[in-house]
Length: 407
Image 1 (cartoon, helix red, strand yellow):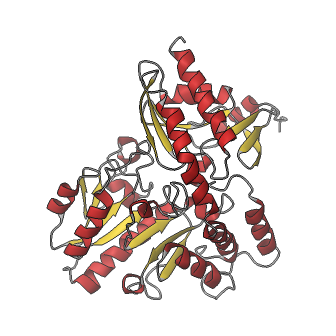
Image 2 (cartoon, rainbow, N blue to C red):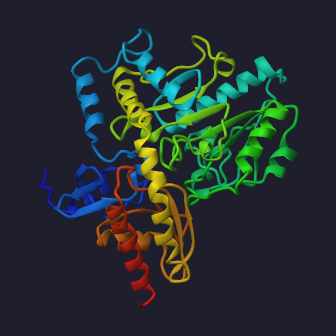
Image 3 (tube, rainbow, N blue to C red):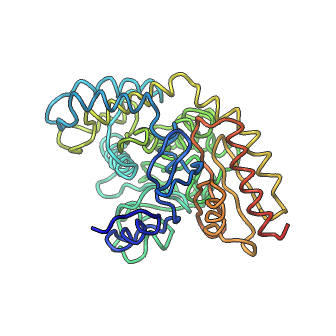
């Protein structure tokens, strides 16, 4: 094989042999630590994406790496055909962290959502008494919960959905954040409402204050399960352990993932109280790798980091600086900004720059970010970032939009 030395060498090889299901920036990461990554040519970048929140604690956090190394020396996979000594402690730690009785571990975020949908439907039939094959789940316009066949069946994103039919039935979509629309859609066959507390793929779209509490009350009143997809928004990102907690809301079911694996292994989970989770019985759901000892050891280490509250507090403390710096760009190349904790969506004037071009220019200034939906970019730096390092991100974005505007 020809020796690969430059970013372009690696990009050309990947383009030749790897499926083209992503359109990445022309940066080939070779080394990563904390909030910084270095490419194969030695260029250094501040990672302001954090693997879509999978790296909430930064790259190679010492406590998480140590947990993985220790477990690698002991066991990695048993399958759930046997017990292992890591699963119970992990589930207990996560249960205590999110305030739910029971945990069902899986691997990816999409698997967690699929599992939650199955639980809700079975609960609807066995507990609520919905007639067979009639269970309905209400979802939100603009949602993103993964890319499995069932999940894209209720997506309104043509790139995710088109040409993959026939689609799974049993879902009704309503406008995001519209409580009246949710209430109008609920009928005797409704078993659950699936909602992202914040829609990340939509550019960190935050519902109006009061929507989540109102949804909680509505679901309670109509005997419908509230499923909160906290895969991107949860685990400290917005300044609280769960995004629902920002408005003191408790869902019936939480789906968790991304940061739960600490950026080391894929770990996801569904969390619910016993009255809901008990519909899952031996043989009715499973996963070869779900709850494996390596994943459980890392997941527990993640829970231990969050149990201190330190990372949530840092995200909350830096929110004001983040918002102020970004809102200063409104009218100067930026149209709108949405900030919650250490998560921001920035709508750049489309006549000025596309989101992809803005991210390319940010990369040239040493900051990695990701575009979504045209001229919107997302910023989600690790929760370990300092005020000074956060300023590096916002200063770079200021330079990008100022230069594009001819300033």
